[in-house]
Length: 328
Image (cartoon, rainbow, N blue to C red):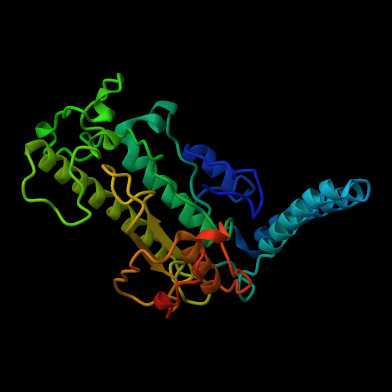
């Protein structure tokens, strides 16, 4: 879902193991766990990274002179990416000190089995969010995506949310997720998302026991996901920047699903939640009447965050322009 730039075929690799994520985000820090790396350490790391990038840029520039126009265009794209990285590591700790929120975290200590275990989803997920929150506070990254699962999620939330009416679930006839030969349990998240009727026009009043149970279970799962989002937002809100604002004040969180509902795989009225970005967006509920696309929204985010040169995003055939009605 994330690419390194416009026209780039290389996907930014994801990381689902919090131990490896820690290494990817904080391996350069030699200050140890739960300590403030300090302005001197931050400056040393920035200088070290910049020197490496300087070497890469010089090599690419020498190579570029010997390439065909087509290959030169490709190398130019790489050079642009490298220069963007250079700009990101120009660390300005704000008045000579590091942001007060920036503390190198302890490395996670999960086992391989725990990282993959269904009943560890809550713990592993919150560890990932803790690491990402600190990475944002320390300026280790400016942009990140948290994906709880791919579209065909096989999480079994019966372990995580035992209070929902799971025992009323059973595979209805003619539901492909139950009859495709995989013998998947009815309580798997992706499987049961196909049980209820469409709710695009409201919740029907004539649902049977399985449909009603599935809708209640799915609602419990959505509440759980919202609680995880609230946890992450509260984490950022509690982290103070050097100027007294919070990390959440200076961050835009956008929570969204890939479809509007499982049973129809609908792509209209896809709900989303925007948090943070103090002063950038109007609070409240907005019904965009299916007249805006994700490209419109992402261009809106870019412009709100100061990238005024982003005047389009994604496929031009599905771009209508920034969504001005949600801007403050």
